Image (cartoon, rainbow, N blue to C red):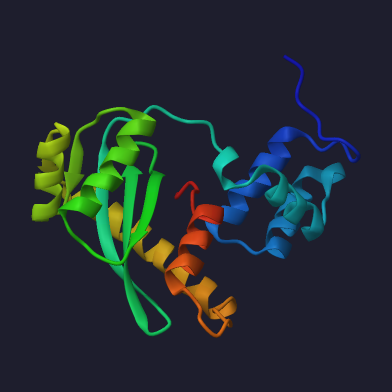
Length: 201
């Protein structure tokens, strides 16, 4: 199969995918463009990286990989003067983020909705959590096996939690709600759907 080329500057597809990967790891547009100099003749500006992000979006960057289990956790984030719950699910083998959800409450119904969204996309898999009662109740309703996550999974989950908390709270610092009647929940969930579905190293 011939390698896909992008119009105008005919940039190789693997360069575009690599630049998107770097950006969603947390690099700035300019830092990402500088990292592309290793490809010699394929130097691209930060504007090119921005255009690729707008064209492909976070949901198209990575091919779906085999899912072995759901490792789920929730953590509190502060946006402005309000607190929300950030729900995260990762795949333990390739350390990729499978799903993210932001809610104003933490209970069995929210956990069930989140897990059902994962099942609808990836199928039924064993769930590993920190043992919150809301997870056990939700898994019983859906019909999934539920276990406590291992120390390794816990360490990975904590690292992912902190990474995403930093990204969301930084977004609020740089792009706060300025409208008179700003909906903070809508503001951060909009950012969540835009650019948080990324691979975590």
